[in-house]
Image: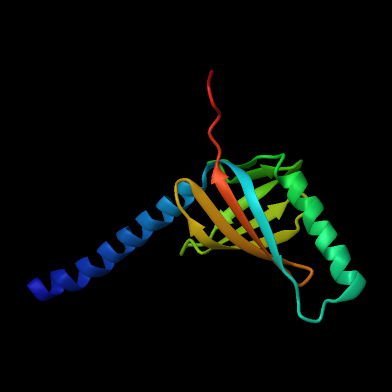
Length: 141
């Protein structure tokens, strides 16, 4: 009888624990974030003018993103730099899908997610971009 109870109890406990981790990951992401740094890894085949143009684009993007706030809301919306859309975190907490108003999907791979730091990568036009964000808390004076 104990063996039957154990075989049913173990899968139920595993589901509860996995469910708790999913909530924890999503809950940690909710809030306002500010960009601290953006680095890019260019394909080895990218050279000359195309690489120079890509580097200039990343520099411009970094400047614009440092002036904005990334807001992940509890109801699954993300807004930043005038962009709005829905975000969904994978069950394992390793990726976040962002679907903008034009129904274009971007996948971010989470490197680190803590209550005060978010590091993720995404690939755009063959360039791997690594974003480092910090939780933003407004100062009250």
